[in-house]
Length: 211
Image (cartoon, rainbow, N blue to C red):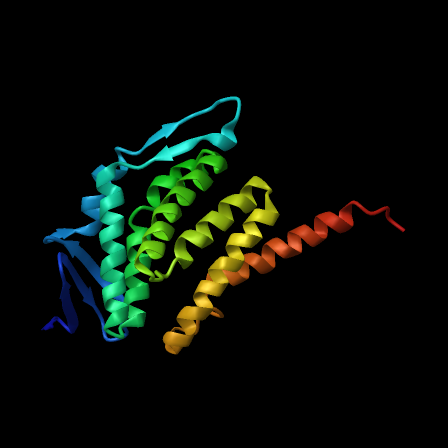
């Protein structure tokens, strides 16, 4: 572990993590290359198998290199948890998910919410498979939040609340292992749930006859 400019640097396999005294990650590199720079060309190789008449069946296809990088990130995050670095592990998982978020945000900007859901569902499917095979858990609050948000935008509140609940449950687990993060109370997803619930209630009452 090396101290540099008031930051700490930790090497785990091919990953190098620079973080501050509060475990907030400043930079992640893989084999010396910045994670975001490494991911950018891989995102450009993502393809979409479209079904114009059935948009709900559109499939986002990830390049093998991106799937492999995601699995290696899961392994590195798990190694941090085994070291007792739960806060740092959560920050690393979030940073890795953040590095791929700009791609599905294009779908949101174009009102292609079904594709946004397909993207995050595809990402989570690989993470869930890795967790099952390794009997391990990775903090998934970030993809749960964006998947819930996409379903809310589609008007599918039932499915949106399921993923929002999963996100809160994930945050509660993290809060027990890393209480200084104040999870899940500090998470934006709780505010989103409250806002969406108010919208649902308003729409329900708007349908009633006025007295």
